[in-house]
Length: 405
Image (cartoon, rainbow, N blue to C red; front, side, top):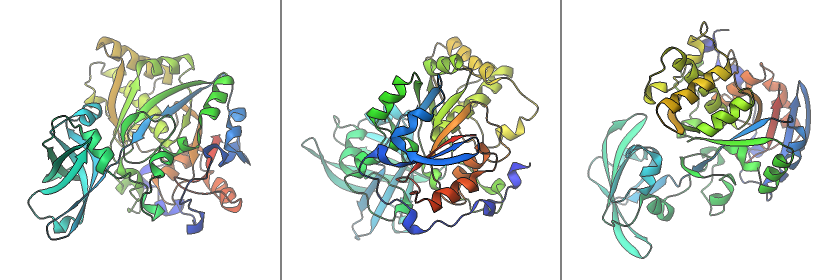
């Protein structure tokens, strides 16, 4: 199969608006769970998930935390300008960025850009009893957005504290509603830790401390990694064939101890969400690069969009790929791998590490639906037909599925 020639129109289905969950249900783990087990489909409630999981397996979660990435400024003319933070530029490190004081720069999308031709935007804000001015200046284009420089004259106030006060949580555009105070809690996973995403890894929204405790009680190992979800996750595929769709690049971070745990489980994992899938599967191609070029920089370990499909001849075991990364970290005296991925997973892709997937129900004609189809060897439509005819709720705040091919 020539993956690049896949026509996105073949991954369409009718999704009535009333099937899109505008709000989450009251208790996260009471959502419905579709179980796809070796071609058999049934349904249950999410809190019964642990009984379906393969014994002695490893479950991998994305611990990213959604930031309040939407900032609003009003010009002297009254025009409202929205600045949507995409990724940090200076400092480029996420952790440093949220601790920085005085100034910083981000790559941003700008709403109502035509009304902001020049000059700086200002906004008076109050943080911890300090009143000061936040300034925003627009530089040139940067990646898929614009470089925006922020400055503020409160030298004890971090950018993280500013976002907590004036930022707005960016709920998905297809919910067609304003962010509410409740979203600050319900649109985060209970295990979110590392700030940086502009969208939640939504498969994780169903987990509660109780379900996690039961997973532990079943003897299933748990590990976390980080992929900061970009706004590109909602970017529709507009080209007829997916060759014309450019995937967004996303920051990933994986600890050495997680890699060691993967090796203990024969480099196999249950992935919670498509973001965990993209990170885990990217590890294989990072390890494959290191097989032939062991001294690359972390930037050079970036996995490009079509890399998996251009490596048909090259092959090592998943365990060898993980070992190569562990040895790389040891040589450089690091405990964490930090790089980025642009991987697209679509029919024709051969999964290397992920053996079981927990995921929500995705938009028609989306790259996430392509990922699911690749995982189920094309059997996605039967799953979605079942979900539509059995009253499942769709998209970010909707129900979920456990997929065991």
